[in-house]
Image 1 (cartoon, rainbow, N blue to C red):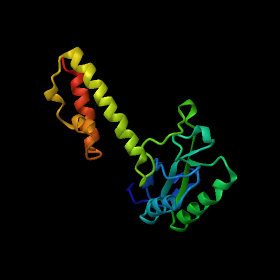
Image 2 (cartoon, rainbow, N blue to C red; image 1 turned 120 degrees about the vertical axis):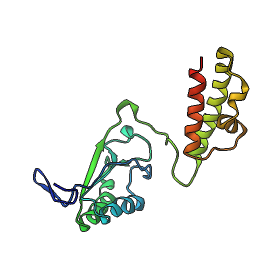
Image 3 (cartoon, helix red, strand yellow; image 1 turned 30 degrees about the horizontal axis):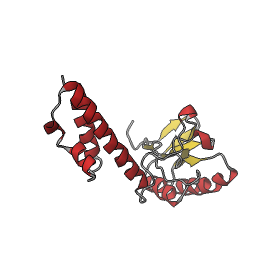
Image 4 (cartoon, rainbow, N blue to C red; image 1 turned 90 degrees about the horizontal axis):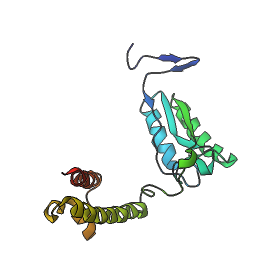
Amino acid sequence: MHLFDEFQVREVTLRNRIVVSPMCEYSSTDGFATDWHLVHLGSRAVGGASLVFTEACAVSPEGRISPEDLGIWKDEHIEPLARITRFIREQGAIPGIQLAHAGRKGKHDAPLGRLGNGTGIQRWLDARRAQCHSLRGRVSASRGVGRKRDSGDCQSLRRGSAPRLPGGIRRCRNSLRARISAP
């Protein structure tokens, strides 16, 4: 058995063992698939994947992981998804869908906002600045951590300059973790 050999799963024959797993894309408006989905998923089929899954596709608007997730709770959602399905099939791949419901953890605010508008990222940075500021005061008071250890990315967050993403996010998180666990 090799990566590029055909593979049989029950009555479905995959042209190889390359499968694109579902990825959250946060690119839908009111659950509708967009040209982004067509290009993103279609390019995986063109590239040779044998099975291409959509992102989690919510079965009800309240069950979305975020408001920008794909949906299939309206009849109108079917045609944009069918367009993507047709294109994937034309490339010799098999389309798949991940049906989803987030349960009581369903969200109505986007984690980082839509790509390009930046408002979600700005909200995240504002919340991170407040968290760094709040945590710094509590940790310094309870553990005797000096101001000198806070001169990294958390300090730059409070000044208003954004760290380089995603590395800056990790540095701030690690800086906070180190200060919390310090004896």
